[in-house]
Image: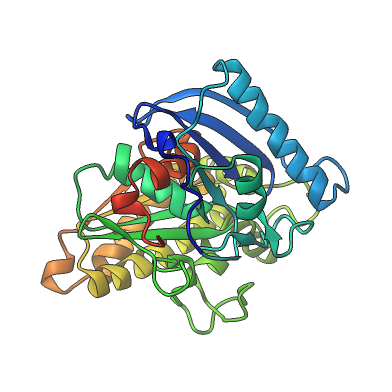
Amino acid sequence: MTDQTADAPAADPSRPVLAIDIGGTKLAVGLVDADGQVLASRRAPTTVGADDADTIFGRLRKLCDEVLDTAGNPRVRGVGVGCGGPMRWPDGLVSPVNLTAWRDFPLRERLAEAYPGVPVRVHNDAVAVVVAEHWRGAGRGVDNMLGMVVSTGVGGGLILGGRLIDGRSGNAGHVGHLIVDPDGPQCGCGARGCVEAIARGPGLVAWAREQGWRPDDASATAKTLADDALAGDAIAREAFDRAGRALGIGIASAVALCDLELVVVGGGVSQVGALLFDPLHRYLRQYARIEFARTVRVVRAGLDQDAGIVGAAAFILAGDRYWSAG
């Protein structure tokens, strides 16, 4: 598989990139310039009711058209995409867990048909966020870092020697499936005790309910749990301590394996701040005992909700560091 690069003018570095961020609940599209600045953007729900695959893709195309129209329909340098997985990388056949209408949906192929003559590059949405943080966020200037997105799931990406490491299938750095408690809860991947099973938002809520927290409140979310923890609820506070422990142990293992300088943590669950980061740092200090691992820094992500768009654009704009598939 090769990029669609027949049209030489498309490589003009002054042209913006059409960048797409596809999640389970929202579609986001933006035009991004060579400096990583978002020139225009639009968002819409991923699905409305029981949408089929083509309806969802049509909604995405409409967003793209709106963004291009807003900017005067410039010729784009390429199309970069971050999409929920799993997917067949780099071919761009996607089957997002939270988007059941797309199963082996040929996303890269469909976008290449819509925008011929320019490269179309599709990678995991968590990887896109990590790339954004390394390119223009909290990881800027760092050669060896792990990025984590702690939200509905736990994803990640790995930068070593200043370059994105993809691995055989594009899943290198998937820290969410490091096992931190072999006797822990069942994970969606089939294993037990993965970081994701313990630290993801729905996992936090499920565990707290098992302990007696708001057992009859079907509308309670991780934000509700965080609010109760801040108000002093013991079970809620223990839930975040448990998540911080899973993240701290997982990070300690990753640091020992990859000799990292920095770990950047973002995503919705990370927004609770000290509730999560205080136990994370405490357990990291407890488990990262080998000398070279003790100096690793863990910081919150520096970019806002445009991180996925910025990272997707970097697959085109900084492909020498963030795209290895040819």
